[in-house]
Amino acid sequence: MEDIRVKHREAARRAQARRRRGDRRLRTGYSSLAYLARLPVETLKIDRAFIITMLDDPNTATLVQTMITLAHSFRLKVVAEGVETEEQAKMLRLLRCDRCKATCSASRCRAMQNNGDVTEVNTIF
Image (tube, rainbow, N blue to C red; front, side, top):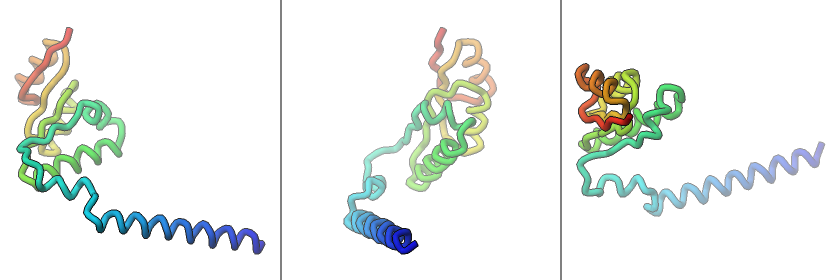
């Protein structure tokens, strides 16, 4: 029983040391988020990899929502690339995405553009 307590204390001590090291790294200004406010950009593009999985994966949906909110906080426009379905376009519109670029068949892209779901289309056959 004493052996388990010793191992538990050692594991807790190692975890605390890792947390302290992580805290120091954040305080030194090496976080890539610190540079976001200084980037000379006007638009944030969200990659197709996020768009095609956001309806099936709640974690990805949260990431997309966070990216849009963060971009708008910095007064950036947001473009979602690779929108393939009307459901994706509707979700992005609900999340206040500024523009959607569709990649789909010509007829489906036309329908999505006519509905106002997307602003740009790249047709595939």
